[in-house]
Length: 215
Image (cartoon, rainbow, N blue to C red):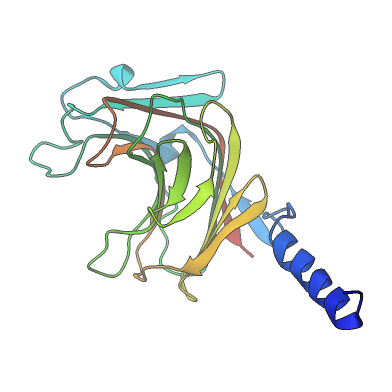
């Protein structure tokens, strides 16, 4: 089968297989926003000191939580968490981007490690990236990164509020491009937020966290 039609079909197949596999610079067209320590609010179980669930050393934020921990505020019905809540850059319109280098150790599963918080009901979030077994998922629907454990990866999440779209990149490669959950009040979070099937110990590490706004 050496016909021109067969050749064109082969070329089309190669294009489809390679589409989205090229790493790009997601910061083009965006302006980096200044971050200081006060922009990093640590949410942790309300009954333990912050140093028992969070450490910052040599530029790395290490956050961990136990499945048996209390929620972050007394009276809350949410699951245990230790998360960095980005302060000072809540947004209601425009195009915003989170960047961070993440690391998840192999004993961690059943946990959300990054969120774009805020949505139009009945949801609470526009994006949740969830660790399950050896993979990172967009919610639990789309695999973002396989063979996740014990290695650093660069995560970029771009949220276009006005168009209601979300793009997720791993190491500069587009892994998800879809519709968000609406709403007009949002902010970024990363760390560990236990889900109902969370492991007994959950941990993630983050470094080089950046926030960008489209110019």
